[in-house]
Image (cartoon, rainbow, N blue to C red; front, side, top):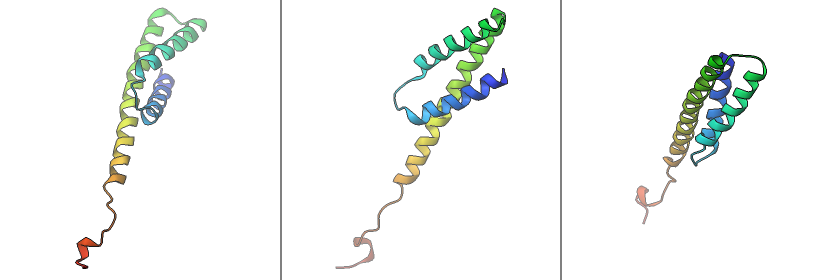
Length: 92
């Protein structure tokens, strides 16, 4: 279960840093389908599959938020640097 959490956090942060549109619903559906089918293929019971999908969806959203916040903070730091102007030094 911790592997699911770590990988969904990484995937969520990549999605949050890369996409500006809301990509979470298709990513959750696609990831839940792959995760659920894989876990059922390996013989896990349905309660474990549902719990793993809930962990996946929750941590994916957390990673998306963190990735988007990191990109937003990084771009805000670059935008604060103003170019020097000649008017502020009293020339002219």
